Image (cartoon, rainbow, N blue to C red; front, side, top):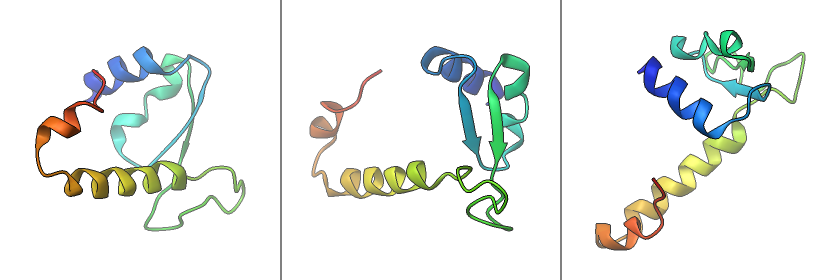
Length: 85
């Protein structure tokens, strides 16, 4: 999984970018590849108490909307018109 994450992050995200993620271990290596990495541990908090700009709320709500949209499609053909690979 880590190899896929490295590949996709390097493909789409510019080095030096600030990435906030959950506590999944696969993200721990991000600083080694030139990214600034902050972690939000949901079991403790949803937003970093010391730096309120560190959160993953934007991606969480986007995931929720995406899942709802996918469930509303009657066939996969319509969905595939929106997927970019």
